[in-house]
Image (cartoon, rainbow, N blue to C red; front, side, top):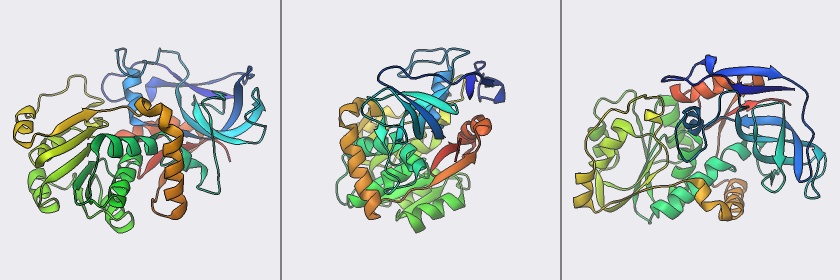
Length: 332
């Protein structure tokens, strides 16, 4: 089998030099484990933080480690009574052709609900992140104006649709005309801003959110967040999910000071991790499956073909190549 390993720590934006593809015998699962033939693997922006040798909410990768992330695949050997050979499962695995999963942490995959890649997106960790970040942290109310940055990604696109289901006006921010059209034409967002072609973010939010912003779901940071903070209404809620604009910066530049703007708005700003809600993960997945099955939530995946191209798929996250969830097809 082949597997990708972490070859060296990057300075600034990662390059292919940070990755090494190795070949060796596939492992044998122990009691309570599953050996899964990986069909799809996930690449996610948070993985950039694991490339740093610094304390964070996710333990850093050691140079030489096999790279880890979400996978969907077929059980080929089972050391657990919970799953049989041939079952389809999702879980935390490795960037490899075969991956060993902890059976207790694996979740069943139902291809009648959605295609397999959806279990790495809307029905996986990104979907749960959107679910808890919006509904528990931001607490949207009918009639609220909700702004979502990184809105065409797996998390942001789900956040916007959940907000619409809760009776909100939704404004998405994305980086291409194709993405903004997808948000408004297909997903039902009320407005969308292409940040790449917008010179004045504050003026753009004046137009897209004329009554101000009640909820801001922040996946990006940077000047987009600076502009949104000037539009926060009284009692606004800000859910800080990601800051991809800063992930490759060796020294984060000092931008406008935001805290004074929270005084007049009395806004609440809260960061969160999806792992904070691990005990409710199954319930969230069941609700998301119901919405997907009913057609109330749409999803999209950008599929990169071949394990050998997994690093390219990861690097593409930082140039905005993906629409929806970025995944790698490892096997048919």
